[in-house]
Image 1 (cartoon, rainbow, N blue to C red):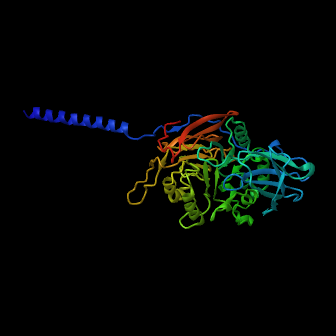
Image 2 (image 1 turned 120 degrees about the vertical axis):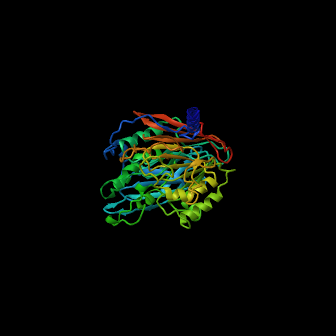
Image 3 (image 1 turned 180 degrees about the vertical axis):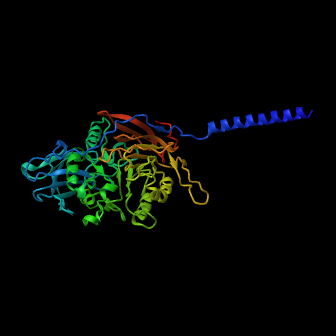
Length: 476
């Protein structure tokens, strides 16, 4: 009888153990895993990224005495009816004027007067840097503009955006951390040849990488300006400052941060009180674009903090439904390179991004590509220990696109396992396209530099957080 009871007790214990194992296996199968997260299986052939030599065709100066070079444009006002035209002359200051005319009225040429400036950096003295703002342009129009005089004058063109409106379609290109290597040239070429090439470029920082050369060789700012002229002279690039644009070098006697960048690349920051050349906003078509500075103070009561707080309150989603934020250092990043580097800014600003339903945040800095799901970590505090990002349909999608091709090379070391908030990541060079269709839908695609041609390697539909806040995590 005792043996029978003992055997019964053992069988009961085994049954309980089996049931516990079944529960454990079942529970494990329904625990949140990577939610469809993808680390691309594509393996790029790793080669050194080298700067193109100074005698490359892409750096060639235009012919003629004092011919304008490094011509570039950006938006010149808050709504897209203004354009800032910039260029450099080498031999002398020359003319500050821009002659421009609407394609429809070639005989009605107008002039705008600009100004000229120069700067010195260690043992370098810049050429004559010209800036001229053209105002009062007609929307949805093609304009020609001429800089320089006589036989050395040069003519370019651009198209103004459509009037601001809730359902106005518009396409942006996305480039970051470009530099001036052979890979950089591939990226820019692929962007130019993309059938859905943007009408303007959102540039997320790190331009010339001059600071990677001895004495922060500012000749690299000149060669970079000549290199990108083929695009930025014809469509506006919206500038963001990166860490390689700081050029703070006290050992060289250079104690003014961002001197070359701010002297060469003006932006329409004085349209709003408290804005800066490093943080500002514009509206374009159906988008309200906010540019932030990852390398300026961002804590409470700082100028950037106070400005952003006011700027977010000004956003009218019934007029510009798409709310875009640009910065250089990504708030979310699952690569080992620059991991959690922007966490200070994330802690300060992420709750605002969720509160105001920012649609998308573009960043660079990490020399690779990554796209997130809509997640936030705003519940974190030291008491409740809720320090894990969770799904949040009011949060933006974060896209890192610092993969332009600079000489520092690709970021190839990834954190493992891939976090739940990361939807797709790949260490390759490339560019992005953000195509706004209407107030509710936009399409994003990332185009890898793939063995000599551009290949769409990742894409997704994005639903507007204000007009159509549905779950868009499964639209890839």
